[in-house]
Image 1 (spheres, rainbow, N blue to C red):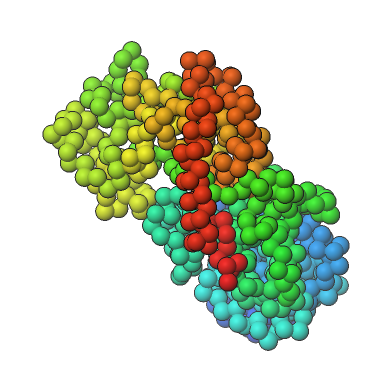
Image 2 (image 1 turned 30 degrees about the vertical axis):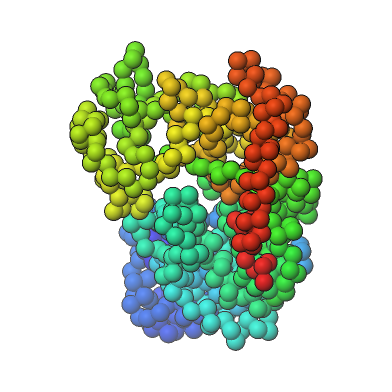
Length: 604
Ligand SMILES: C[S@@+](CC[C@H](N)C(=O)[O-])C[C@H]1O[C@@H](n2cnc3c(N)ncnc32)[C@H](O)[C@@H]1O
């Protein structure tokens, strides 16, 4: 409460000091306050009231700041919450009930009070007591300055939203238009685990992902996503809207999951805004808006912007049982959306780059601490990272990597006998291995790495960076007669025969493939290209449309001593050899019915 009072205007503080002098009990104060500003039970007990009178004294009015990262705390500036409410009003939506599940300093509640003239009730929940009081005083200030503003009844709760019982609304929400409004916390479960925070729902693995999914990042979810799902569950049966500010990745996940949830939700729209300008956050974000109380069974989300809400720029969602990022573009590429006959692999994950990644200078290995090392060469391989994948051919690495294992889970004690220098070096730096935060290393050998297997040792690789917006594929050649490795930001296909690698490169670096990828990958995501996306490239369908000459054309930018390996005979032999594999991949997918892109609910 003390901090909340520090944020009020001096004129409001003066008003409060004069006004509250007259009351003897907190009941008297509450009765008067509900008339002034609508807030029910402004003071919960007599201590709240006496503390309040004490904190009003000028000596308490100094400001403080505290660390609130675990609460995903990005308070909405009033200019943005006002804009959101005015857009809803312009659309003709006049809610009778507003619910703000994590109201913070109350920006959205205040904007709603100013914008919607027919509001009857407002409900808000916030975990942080200082904000809870801040909002009460800000509402009081609003009504002191605007005594003739419509005054709904306001219920504010200082509670954990994950433990809040939303059945409370069942009686009130049935009859009236509801608006669930706000800006839920911007933090993910994995960021919370690094902070050792338990600001999480009890059922934190609500998507039922397994341990392996932690490696690929699939098990990661935003707290805001969970809160919106809670809102769907509690309010989809009523008439109204949800309008909440969230990261674009959250909107993508919600749209992906909508078909299996069976909620009455329709008219989904993402209205982009500049998160850097409003929140100083380097993330792509939008206002997620949807209608409650009816389902169109069209699982599509429109994209527009807060600046031009009526101008639909594109749409994403489910088309013909496939999840796509651009519905219009996809119509042109859908023939190539299928099953890749080869398995895309992610590169090596180790989370210990200062120790395991080395540079070579004047024939010496140098680690991330600038130490010169003498190590056995056998376990050291060239390493290609995302930033290296710029040209179609990579034959020299910028860095090297020590591979402690040849397959996931391999015991690393063999290093002591066979590679004593490497063993001594790793043991001297073992603290960096034991400090690795990710749960995947728990219970594994001390020097364990991931993303390693027989496939890692294929000499020729076709690789793409998962992080870059533009899809671009490179051929990776062996270095020092050893296969090169990729780091875990990259994906690759491995080949024993350079001709096969060249054929696949020729197919992948063409516009057919790139258009398909642009229509199914979300380029505003941190990692637009994932294994799931790449496994959808139907190489053979693209090759059919391309033909040998076009497939070969792209390879003219490679040196002749490389491109010469792609001949018509090799092209024909490749399709004869793998045509069957492609057919099997297709049949397998049909048999399993559920592919990574097909939603279970479509298979009823
Ligand atoms: C992104 S801020 C937005 C605040 C406010 N909705 C706004 O638009 O300015 C998220 C808010 O969620 C609150 N919060 C975080 N975890 C919470 C929880 N478990 N229960 C209730 N509120 C929570 C934070 O304290 C913070 O005020």
